[in-house]
Length: 346
Image 1 (spheres, helix red, strand yellow):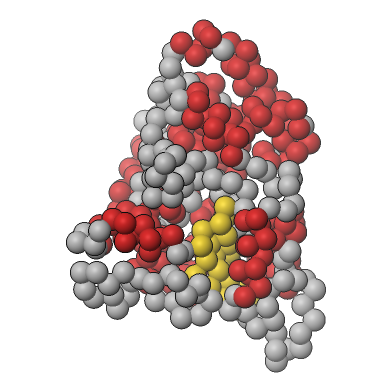
Image 2 (cartoon, rainbow, N blue to C red; image 1 turned 120 degrees about the vertical axis):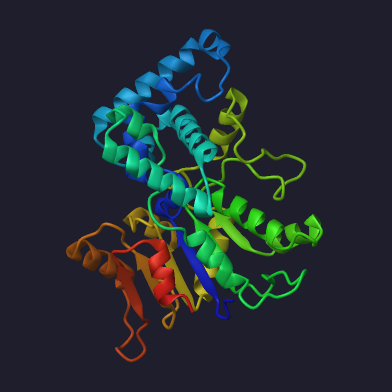
């Protein structure tokens, strides 16, 4: 149960425990493994596409070659520098998201996959390309921890959590649908005697803002125009998802972004989970200046060294003119999402 206005800001690392790539791993997959190029038919995209749209395959290969040689670590930045390549770049991003979705798992299944992959790596059975093609499932299961925190004290066959008070909100830079799917499954099967429409109504009270788009909606989000979770990608699905993707460099104002900024302005505690703290991402949300003075701020910096943690901390507090007594508490730790929540979620 959360009794204060809490906002979670999610970056790519927030989805990593469930089989989705981090920004760095996405670049490796595209440039080294060349996921869309080498896995085209294996992912269920019709074979005839290779014959009907050879130009598309040529575009893909050219994008991969240029992105690789650019040495730019962010595909968003590469697309921003090369706007003519944006359509095929988003198509490739959509492919990688759907491929990760097909291989994704939650809870114990995700942990099991993580352990199996680690064991495979130790035994050296697969080659480097095969290993790179596998999902990492990096980090521990924070979705389940947070969900159990939310339903704490809920005893009874229809005691669904109430999100109508606006105490909880998610602002995500991710395009994937893993959080939405997890919450739907968790509620649907925690309260099996509750009609599905009540579960959906409960979920729709929860703010989950994709400031730069979501691939496609799930059934509970839009029953008239949805795509099932783990559906095999097709040409039309990839194109639809690509059209829904916006990069952080494309537009500075949209309804979701404005709503996200309003959530932050009202927050009493914030958690940055799997977030990279890139200056452009901070700027898009108006951070740190719009964070209320007395808001408690916590963030992960997984894999960062001490100097990098200090630099991140400075970005969060930059421009804070409050005196030492009124200053908000800010904690940035080189840890994963689960450990941060265990330590500080109240």
